[in-house]
Amino acid sequence: MDFLNDIIGDRGGELIAELTSKAGFSADQATRFVPAAGSSVMDALTSRASDLDLDDLASPSAIGTITQQLDIGALSQEAGVTAEQGAKGLSSILPMLMGLIGDHAKGAGGLLSLLNAGGAGGGGLGALKGLAGKFLGGR
Image (cartoon, rainbow, N blue to C red; front, side, top):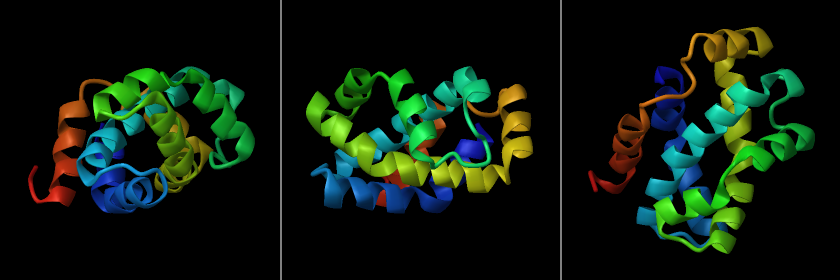
């Protein structure tokens, strides 16, 4: 989970800003949504890696494939937003998040290595929430 922690630690503020400016999330809602969405995206990447061009994760095709795997209702509920708002939020951050994942993994080989090693998903959601919380001054 260090991989995703690094991304959220480095760029989580941008993802949160995107949610607040384009999807109407409050800062608190965005702070809860980002780590949950990140974890869900990594789980979806793990299960669908063979269906994706791992060198172009931000492509419309890759984003569509990953979006189909996500439980938008559960993500929305966790952040305290409506399913419609959650879908809007996801569409506003998913291209950026997928691009960040691809860039951070340094290509298909790096991403496959991380996914195969189990470094993409798992029980680190609490750590991700803690990192995202730092963007709101420890809330």
